[in-house]
Length: 404
Length: 101
Image (cartoon, rainbow over all chains, first blue to last red):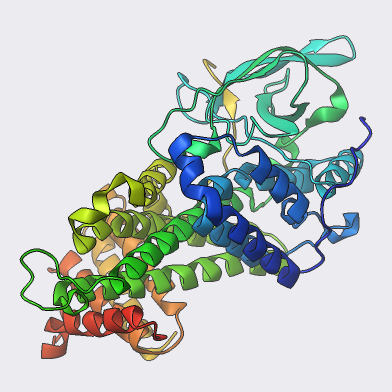
């Protein structure tokens, strides 16, 4: 195993410290968010700040020196960061997934090494999705036996965080077609991370392509995720929860801009039969609908996160992990609805001047629309309904070889 | 759950029972409706007691019955038709920086 790098991260010890650190970092991130999005700047300084904050290590188990915070705290951290800058809020989502993979499937040696790395501020990037296969769960990236180790080949897309990562955990299949994560060093020979990310929103996540060409892999870097897939787990619920929190953050920031802009105006919209813009009954009613639904969304996010924490406290089983995923799926569905609604409708409520490019109010909708299409919302609500109507809990996700 | 949410949950259960009776328990559109209503019900139930919870519950009840008009019925009141006024009040408070619940 490689030697851990020098300490550069704050050690957070509790849920309270984690939330405080998130607020502190969010204040920093909010400042340059518009410029970063406008100019599509690589967020090197911001990712270093994230590492130094200690937030990347808050789910390291207590047995390994981590704060081991609750899922409710992680959801709140993501919500806070994403309200400041949703691209920076999204980048660590897979970092936390990959820490959880280590928790669920890492060997004691892998856990000791990688948790120490994370406590020192190391960042995991994402390399899971592929294109051109039968489904999102069919992949071609695979390990080939090479002497005592392996060679890794494949191409991954939507690799959020890979550009600024220290390690890139790659979803792959081992020579026996079993699901593994290969924790590849960012600077390993054969790893090429492209900056080919050109979306309308979440521009600063740099979720581009990663090519893996005959990357040499030692067995200690292969985390056998397949071992955990037959046991009840929270990985799917956890990643869904974080996705939801990002969109709740976007909704809150969009609503905040809407209210701030309205408070600063007295002139009514063109055609409004009122003398003061803040007396426009249609504006008031829509603001009220958004305020109310956003409050429910934020309360619901916390309640969904509690389902994951309750499952841990009770001991994971098929039912409570399934119910946690149902709860996370539902709140993700609502988060898409509300973040899109607020970020779109604010223009109608503010009038023509809100469309000025300098105000950058479009970023909320662009970010919400880009992030929410990560997966199909219809099928998130279906997960909820399948439990309610048919008593059927979602099946665990598992990767299969493409073309097999 | 509060009494209002219990009542709303009972309505959703009635809608779900109706789907099962009609053999629609695997129908994508019906499941989409149920999933969305269930998700909103949970989110509203997570709110503290107060005006926002009351108004959202009333709004969800209207949506729910509209979504299953042949299965569900409810004796609506003038207040249900005037919910936009409640949202205006909430909006006014939001703009005035008042806490709302």
